[in-house]
Each structure stands twice: as C-alpha cells, then as structure tokens.
Length: 156
Image (cartoon, rainbow, N blue to C red; front, side, top):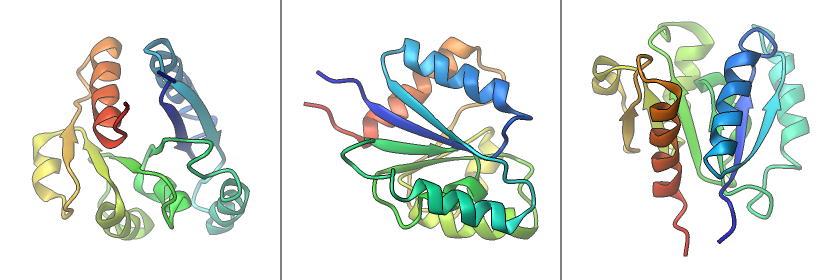
C-alpha cells in the first residue's frame, strides 16, 4: 500500500512556518507523503493570484491524493478542485476576504476542520465538520488529521 500523498497549502510563510513544518513532519512520521506549498499571502490579492498560477500545474490526482489548506483564503488556491480538499478554519474569521473565502470554500470543501464546537455549529456546509481543538497534543492532533484524510481517500 502506498502512502497517502498530501499537499499542505499555507500562506502563513514564514510567520507560522514553524507550525506548518511541525505538522508536515508529524504527518510524514505517521506514514503520509507530505509536500508543503508555502507562499507569502499577506493581504495582497496579487500574491494569491501568483501562487494560484504556480500551484495549478502541480495540483492533479497523479501527484496528490488530497490537499489541506491551512485557512479559507489559502483554500482558494485549490479551486476549482482537482483532488479532495480539507480546509482548516480558525475562530478569528469574522470579516473581509477571509469571511468571503470561507463562504465560498466551505461549500466546496470535502471536509472542514474547526477548533471548537461553537465554530462547528456556525459552519454552513454539507461537508463533514471535524473539531480538532487547539488543546490536543501533537500526536492526537496528527491521528485525528490522518482519520479525516483517510475518510476522504479510500485505500484498497
């Protein structure tokens, strides 16, 4: 059986790069083939357009089994979808581009990860919404993420 091929998409590079790198390393240690597509998003629309242009040729089912965007605006890079899409949503999404992106992405995602039950109740999506709270240790967080990924990509 081959390893699940995961693409992590993150615009929080380098500020949150350590957290993304740690997540990638933990998922790799759990047996996944992980690649990170990192870019400087900031609040610059053109950074997202440039990143989308760089990612599109690479994002196909022969290369990845699924993609996991670290926030709703990052998930815009995976649209239109070519592989199953997981999106993490922070409790801080309340206005602007992030709220617009959340509305668009939540309807198109295959799974949504939130940090609290309150956030789960506010999600407007048909996709399964999984609560993976910030209080979990890295091992439990990784195990929960792997469960979500495996539910989207049946392995035979």
